[in-house]
Length: 339
Ligand code: AMP
Ligand code: MG
Image 1: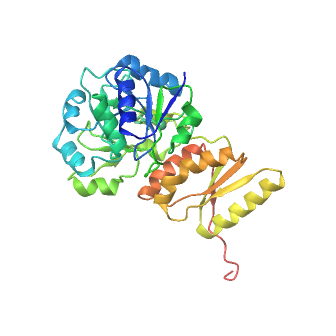
Image 2: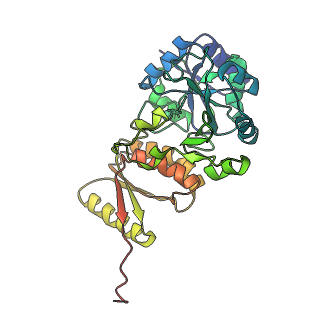
Image 3: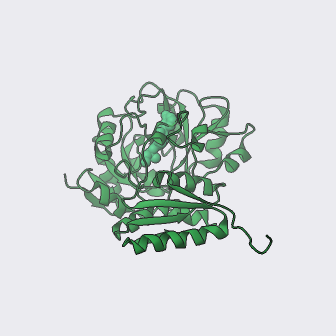
């Protein structure tokens, strides 16, 4: 299959919408990461997404809409809490899990009786959905297991020849996937942390949200049963070996230097990722950095952890998965002058 590379002209968005309408696959930019889209209500079309990505079929997709009216096609009931959250954060990088309507094919939702819905703020994404005249199911446009794509080139690296078209938009502004919030019970539960944080959500609703407990466990833990099926799979892995150093700030730099020197002496090409406390920048560039270092043929990536708070927590969720939980803890440095 030849993959069309479509610049972001009006005519090209119309061509992309025609592909969606006729059951094809189009990768498109959003503010979070690039999505791989198909008509969410056409099960043959969404089925193709699993094949193109090599994605397990029980991993549901997020359904993207451009107008709140489309919710009627997808969700059984929309609570007042849900409405408040949608008013506060849509269009934007947060997805709500709601009870699904019957006409949403079960293949789109990985067999679940719930549906995850998001209205992206990216203008091109919304224009594509509007012109397609149907909600668009779209997971991230990468091969399953690889870092999510935040540029059109990243998409082509994984998907050239496997899908009908890519809309060649700008690099994504946020850089990590949307927050996923389950609204199917009384207490809203964050299934996947993202750019919109627990603190942001708690400011606009009466009831306090909770985190899904599995976000604090390694997949090797017997009690690791995430409510978001996608969270159980191997994710975001670069080709290079990847280790995270965490713990005492002073100790981290020293530990990184020692590890780097040792690995280099063994003949490895080593690169360090250090974002300091800039979690915005970390979110925006982390996946792109992993792909860049793989292209450079790096053998070992060492990253300093971010403070796991707010957006830093969301970035660390991705970083730990990327590293396959290979984390080195650095203890407090002993101060010899006191003893
Ligand atoms: P991706 O589109 O690759 O970012 O993955 C979408 C994420 O949303 C996955 O982690 C899914 O497990 C999650 N998700 C999608 N639909 C649902 C749903 N109905 N219930 C819970 N999680 C969902
Ligand atoms: Mg993904």
